[in-house]
Amino acid sequence: MTDPARDPGRATSCQGPYGTEGDPADCGDPVRFEVARHRRPPLRVCPVHLGPALLLADGVLWPPGISLIR
Image (cartoon, rainbow, N blue to C red):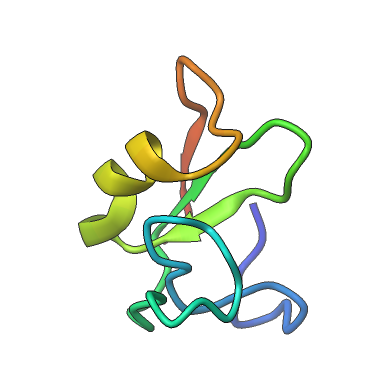
């Protein structure tokens, strides 16, 4: 796991439940979890959007691979 504050190429704010960068649905809260996805970059979400992301985002693996970031 990398520290998002030290890796500017990675999103440091929540990508919302759908996982599309720049989506108006992005909430902007700090990222706490990273969800593995098939043939897509990992989805980085806040605690509020972890559940919806598991159900709604494209390519989420099942069973889900979830990593705690911080």
